[in-house]
Length: 450
Length: 87
Image 1 (tube, each protein chain N blue to C red):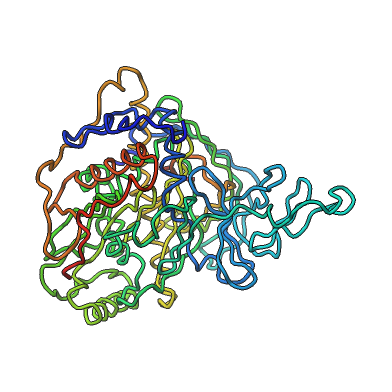
Image 2: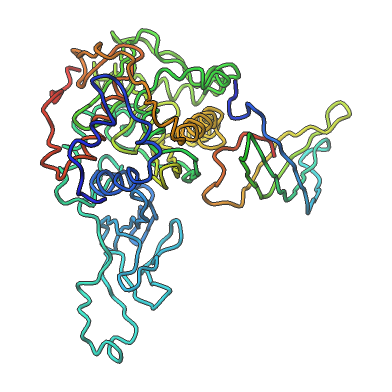
């Protein structure tokens, strides 16, 4: 389908004025193919964390949409992201998940590429190519732009895409709660343990919209609330939300969104992680440090969110990043990273690792029920009869407002405004022929009052 | 209300290469085994979980209880949508 799009074709499937979305966008293979071009080949995508490649020669094989990408740090320390394919016959030049190397050598005919992407080895260069091959033109294909934001690494294939921070817009404030130290210092996180990777039989947008702000799916997780898997052995997480407003925040000009508790006043610490003294003391200490360092800014506690299109996060409990890689209209490969402050005590990291596994990923007691819902919501929407009936996104329609303390479109409590913002942006991307059509409208682009 | 197991999975556990060692205390033993766990669920859900189990069993009131179980799956990208069963 490429960029020859029928202008406003998707706007007809995504009717946000009436809160209606066609099931076609979740099950239709032609729409899925168009997404690869219009969304994934253009957008800024999360590709990893700098702590995964600390030394020269380190690499981590990641994904951008359907495509395998090598994230690497070259001999001089510069970070690159390359399409994982040989320029000669397309063979994957790296088939490991991560490691350290001086060169990526293609096993097919032996072309070798340095960690800065240059073609440095061609067998029979003299005898067979007669020294006529212009090796400078046949290096690995590099992303158009790469950004390191507080240790999180992002890339886009589109030269015309706006700089990362412009793409993020007002979403920055909510992403910061994830990426900054628990005591309020900027950045300072590292990836804890390995990356969980698993297949989910659903459309990738189910996961993205769930994390952008579905505060309505409490029944999905009733079992863990009853069992008590939280850091202190109760509920899903230790409840830090006493004395807070629960906000749904949409950044419609970017398609991003988050749910976040916001304290209405400076409040005393609510004890968390109470099973282990050293861990409880740590969280109490960093909470107080954060209050002092950020002042009113510390009132924003942070929750779940999605950076358009497919990076989702939980900013605090459990602190993690997920990417929903598209693998066909009805298949998604989920990857989950867990974050921790690099300088946190080992006891804290150990307790967090156990809580993260208890909650998240395919074996996580919370997340395994999500997969069941996304699986059969996709399956039950495939049929020609089912496709005639759109999904309902009308919750809170017309009740969207603003908040004096935080940027974005804000609704107090439970609403589907964030999902509406996501699909509005998705439809705009699907219909747009260039980034010029996607210029920010200026809505909500004001600094936080915090 | 654990929807991942509602309706429940049908499972079959096949164990091989079972090794037993003395444990760290007199009431404990270490047990190592390889497993093939087949899961069928709902209409056509089908998963194979193959890997190794490293258990610590403790003798309590005349019965062996699982004190600790480490499961190592032989899959890099897990092909099952979730892990909602015991190994």
